[in-house]
Amino acid sequence: MKDYIARICDEELELKLETFGAVHIVGPKWCGKTTTAKQFAKSYIEMQDPDKRDMYMETAKIKPSNLLVGENPRLIDEWQIAPNLWDAVRVSVDRRNEDGLYILTGSNSIDKTSIMHTGTGRIDTLCMYPMSLYETGESNGAVSLSGLFQSQEFPDDGCVSKLSVDDLIFAACRGGWPSSVRKKSDRAKLMIAQSYFEGLCQDDISNVDGVRRNETSTRLLLRSYARNISTLATNRSILKDINANIDMGDSTFYDYVKALKKLYVIQDVEAWCPAIRSRSAIQATDKKEFVDPSLVVAALGVDPDYFNLDLKTFGFIFETLCIRDLKIYSNALGGRVSYYHDRYGLEADCVLHLRSGKYALIEFKLGSSDIDDGAKHLSEIEALIRQYNETETQAKLRLPDLKIVITGTQYGYKRPDDVYVIPIGCLRN
Image 1 (tube, rainbow, N blue to C red):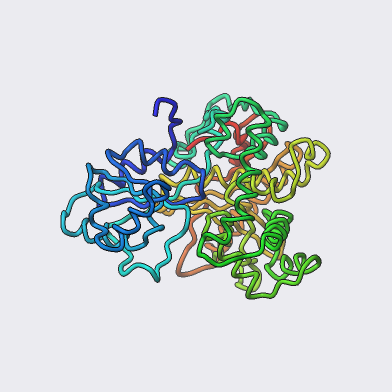
Image 2 (cartoon, rainbow, N blue to C red):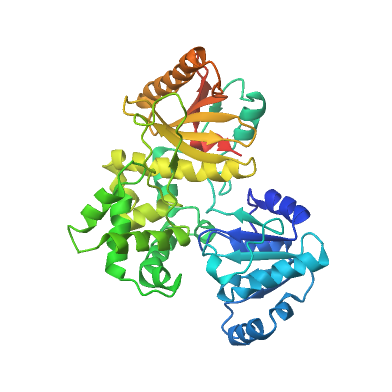
């Protein structure tokens, strides 16, 4: 495609095709999985093609290997419509003993009951997200996350973001959907996430596994989730909020949440539980998050103008935006995102771990007035780890390699306490 917008995961996909027989690209719909896969595929079939779907499904029942015939890498888009294609791909990879044969894409997580083998060692997974601010061209990329981890590479004179708070509000409301970025008018750009949300409530929540679910219940659950985004709200409190409007039982609630996770819409963040505090002191509840901030805005039923008078609420949505971008930037590094919070008030909004063992403690602060407070938290956690290591005679904990406050402000710099202040509009992978 001439107008293809390069994605950060392109390099990772190329490497995985060099390493494995097949690559399974997963992620929410509309995030660009098929478009990206087609940049690497030399032939493809689209299982959802209405003109050919019946023919494809019949072939998949009788002889699924026929659908694999074509120049490699061969893309099989929305393969999960015919789940036995997974095993056909695995068998083909085994027999041919070659790399880069197939690319599978899907907007639902795997139903393991419908496949015979996981494909471990043959089919590797690549997770895609909506576009980051760097991919949309809104972040100038002055600071490399990889460079910081490798050699604390940071501009001598700091960095300057071109994004105002109003720009960040619009970017969060629009989301990182590739189709929205290409639209000309702001109204059109904002409609994409709203359309996604409507389709999610009306159809996708039921189509994901063929179980009919109630549209109103879905809307209320997503709205309650959105109200508690970037917090440690319990499922019990969210269910209570829903039951103020309708009656929803525990099993129904968890069934809906499971379906939304299967669609890659809900992506909660797990707690980091190091040994520096007792288990009873550390908050281990998952932090509530959506895959993209625009879905939070759509669930709340508001628009960018709303946040002009409610920047406090936008602060939580800003965190969702930052988490999304950090997941994208760190994926190629083998990054894993968690958070730290204990009952003594110490917290790190994000803990970014790499496979190498390196990690960063990160706080998100929309405005400059809270930077000192965020930096203080990070330094206190580091001090606590030092204290733990001085008293622990056996296993020691690694000290954080980076302490970062990611902001919605204009200027970035390194503080005397070795905390990096980095505008989200300056960050890249």
